[in-house]
Image 1 (cartoon, rainbow, N blue to C red):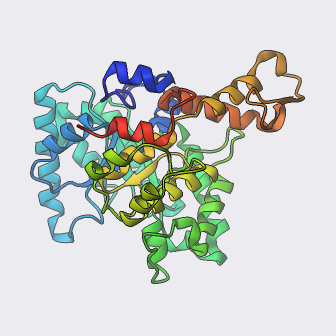
Image 2 (tube, rainbow, N blue to C red):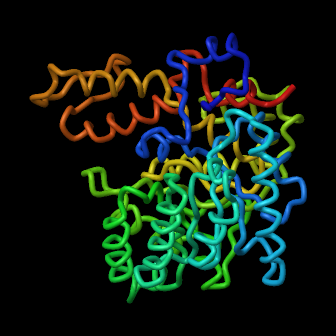
Length: 388
């Protein structure tokens, strides 16, 4: 699979200076963590789940979570588990290539080995489990269950803990909770693919819900906990983990109505006013701002609950030609001693030592999402990805 692999090769050649790499579920964890992109959630109760997965693959989705937790009712869990096993078996029987990375969001640790056992040979399609309301105390049983299931199945399985508990949100317990989480995920580092943020649960603790024109970063109590998560768990010194962006709840975007209007990026100076108005009217402006702020604050990828969110996340994850040029200059072997240099675009200072970690992260993102050609921006990438 690859990002933008669903569009024609000749179109990719026009869009990209460096095309996104190909990868599989067996690729190195560091690459997969960066490549998660827009992780699309779907209730495990959907009767045509196998068809949905194939359909979303054809639309550019590379990671999905099939949910047995909050998206379904308490009385539906047993039926959802049966449906999940049935749909995985159906998919495995089709022999479909290039399926997304598939994860299951469970409620309890006991579900992990039980589901792996029930999946049988179809477990080869499973990449891991999403673990809700993760803290040090609650997380250990989940990770121990994952190890057991992995040993029994012979299949490499990853964990994606969700950080969403009130202990994380409350100021008096936040640091202690984060320290505990770090000790646990550090112990199981080789199996923790990424950390996910449960911002809806954070808002719930205070009876809040952000409006479609507001981002998670505009809700200060939420922004403070995300910042602390990145501060303590997302460092670039080798101790950190990939932290993914929070879910965007609104999905009024109608893709087809945008295609005739997608001419220029809403971030370019001199943008068309009609495009700006259309984006704001259909809730896309808030999503774009939130993705941009996610990336500026150290998050990579995003939890998505609607297919219309996938392309904007991926289009904004592509590395610009200017970013790529700066990163290349900073990482040249002859720059190992440090120093300051003017960028090739002659519009900024590149300071080799302080900017090195940024450059390394940028080059990893360039590998999985590609590098845009000089004249290609967000809107061109988005328009190219929308099905005809």
